[in-house]
Length: 220
Image (cartoon, rainbow, N blue to C red; front, side):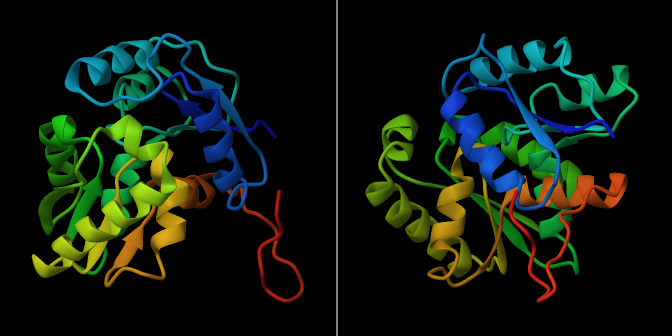
């Protein structure tokens, strides 16, 4: 069977590796593809637009499904229109997961310049979206330092909870490991976009990580 391909719209191979580590907990066969033309992190509308052009026209490995693993889903719909396999953007998948049960939800992320694009994506995919809550400071500097990133994300999650959110999406492929770290600490249920996309792909393709006899998922 052909693999699932995880597309990293930014150029950081380190980010691709980190996201594959998370994706392989949910999908038994996933490989990575990195957009070498992009900056290391997509933080503003121009970078998002450029990444969308790259992904929409990309020649990616043969796959049974594609995951576009940047939160703004750059190029995902256009890529999906020209290939014959499911193309799942992690932002849209997160919104669909977050709004299940008509629960009010919000986004916490590090990229305020992408706020309008994120708002539009969330509103198009899910009901009950309350808005974005942003961390303070330079996104690249923050994401490079977990000791600064985690408290900043927790503070923004607390602000979202005070605004009425019962679920919070931690918005960004590179933030997936941070979301796992802070989940026990925050006062709301967290949605990890990459995990939501992996679960959606698994349900559509039958790619599931086998369960061990004790019911846990085996690692890949």
